[in-house]
Length: 403
Image 1 (cartoon, rainbow, N blue to C red):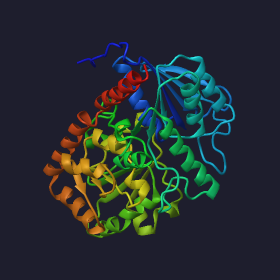
Image 2: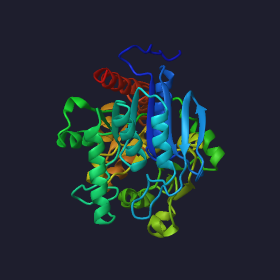
Image 3: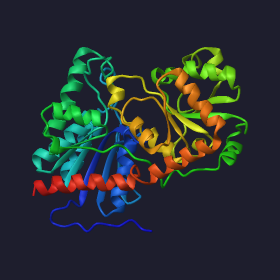
C-alpha cells in the first residue's frame, strides 16, 4: 500500500530544510535522514545538509529517495579543542545555501556552528520559521557527563550557551527524549512550544532475517547464543562485563558480538572477557541487516548519568526492526517502551542480566514472541513513517503561527 500523501495548503509548509552537524552516516545524521526520506514520501520537498565524510573543499549534491542530500565540505569541521560541527568552508556554504534557496521552514538539529549559523541567518534575514531539535546534552550537566564537559571550561560554557540559545530562539522545539523536553521547559520555553518525538525504527530498510542463514554468511557457529551490540561506548558496555563473565563460566556458548569500532584490544577488558567477544568491526548501515539477523538478542547497557537519562540511542530502532528481544538497563525512555511493549527485559544489576539471558536461552518460544512484539513496535508507534507524521504536525503548527 502506498503512503498517503498530504496536499500542501496555505497553512502547511512544502519546502523544508533539515540541517545536520554530523558527517554523513554518523550519529544524528540517521535521525535526520530517516525523517527526511519519510517526509518526502508524504509530499514534502526536503533538502538535507550534512557534512561530507571525504570532500574537504567542494560540496556534493545528490537526489536520493526524493531528498536533496547535500554534503558540505569538511575542511576544519573538527576543531582540536572544540570537537565537530565547524568548517572553514562548510559554514559559509551552508549560510549561502540557506539564503539562496526559498524554504518554508528550517529544522535545525542541535546547536553546532554549522547548524546554528545557517539556521539563524535564514530565521532572521528571511523570516523563515525555525524548529530546533534537541538530540543530546552537550554542555554543563552537574554530574560531568555532558558530551563536551570533559573539555576546557570555556568550551563547556560555549556549548552550554549555544545549545540553550538556539532552542530559546526557535519557534518550536522538538526533543529526542522526555528529559531534554524538561530541560527546554526549565529554560522558560513554553511547554506548548515543545514536543517530544523519539527516533524511530527503519522498518523498511531492516527486516527480520533468518538467523541460520545470517550465521552461515558470517561464519558464526549455530550453537552460539549471540548478544548483539551496535556501536562501542566502553563506559556503558563495561556495565555488562561482570554478567558476561558469569555467563561465560555457566554457559560456554554465550558470545557478545560488537558491531562497530571496538577500539584497541586492551579496551575490552581482561582476556577472559575478550574470549567471549566477537568483533565484527565497523559495518556500513546498508550492510547491517545480516549482522543483526545473526543475533539472538540485543544488549543496551546505559550507565546512570544525566546524558544517558536524556538520550535516545538510535540503535534501539535498528534492534526492534530486526525483530529480536532487547535487554536494556532502566535508564532513559527506551526502558519504558521495552516494558510497555514486552519486547525484551529491563535489567538493573549483573545478576538481573545473567537471569535475563538465561531466560531467553531456556525459553526460545518466549524469546521469539518478544522478537515479534519488537517488530510490531518497529512497524507501529516507532515506525519512522508514523513519527514523520508527528513531525509534520509540528511543522504545520509552526508554519501556521508564522503566516
